[in-house]
Image 1 (tube, one colour):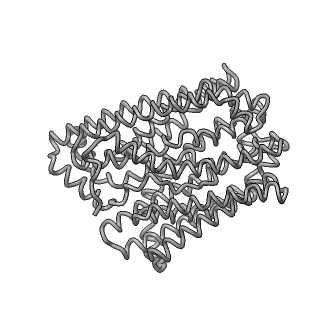
Image 2 (tube, rainbow, N blue to C red):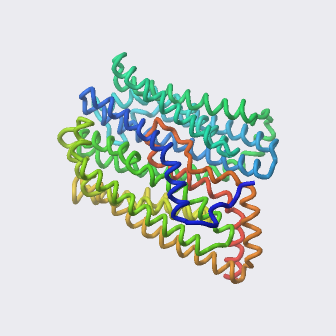
Image 3 (cartoon, rainbow, N blue to C red):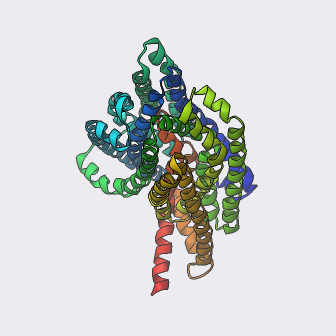
Length: 511
């Protein structure tokens, strides 16, 4: 039985320990993603970096589907394990894997057939589009492999083996880092070599995770078609909202990429570097999202509402201090960053502008991560979906469009930052109000004992969720930059009963 260690002691210390521990692993993956751009930049062709930027936008979308499916698998398996229903856990694992395989094959085939059209949609043209297409032609067919790998990694965390889940992604990252220069330079394959290295890395992640699930934990059961049909409903009940949430982010990213593409491939090359520099720089903030969830959840379960509020406050303070410090570092080293990646002209100017004026506004994205994690642990996971989808659409599209009209390519970044500010502030305000609302229910019409019993029952089914800060995301894709979304969504299952209780009380109050 997991121990509720976050209901006592320093909240800030818990946040620091949880975030820093997770950041060590995920930052290593982000660095590998950044190496792709670095190695290709050594070839001296700006179109290569731009092509990776366009291809990354498409790849980001495809892997987001797998992320949503892996969330469902992890939630269902962890719940069964927590209830000591091993046979059911094996059944749900296998059926979830089958769903993941079928869905990923369908998405891979669809995307593969429309690669040229999708690239045209995000603004790729000419030689850059040809390079991006050759990259995706190699990478997209391996989508089922990485989706299964992510699902298996989620299963490992569901049984409490987060270390092996992390090791699988680290090994994949290591494979990518080793074979990148071999295929790019030694075999003179250029961008296609980077794609081959990524496919090999996906094989490595899958192999390690599969061995852990099948051999170490013996979690794979036998397929039964009737059981499969029966399990489709609970699988998609979680996977549906999770996929919607995760797909919203790459759509928003595609909008930004398309807007920047209107100003030329050189700017897209700079944007591609930034797309991989951001997660390396702010890896601690992505880890913070997963770290604060269990802390909020445990204190909510113990009805320690003041500590829940303090968790939000301390997490926001930590986020602000960290982002300001990193932004200052980016500002001081902005010219060195441009030099290392051999960016020139417009690409260099875009990077310099971001490091000088835009990076600091990432604090608002960070506090939205914190707010979303609290929503999921306070029984309102739908709020998280609403804010994520909202930020990626109404918080991005109009601001980026008018920003481009009024301020050119720099206006695109400013517009995106303004959307982040609005949704970050709104998210935090709603999070604090939600804590007050739940606290009033606990002391009012809904008895504390009833609320505690509901929370306890939910927690018993997800006792392994403390490890959720370790991501199963693909280390070979720029989707790593949004790993926080995975961590946030995975917390929602533990609070379903609480949500139902709150919803029932709201209806009663209305009547």
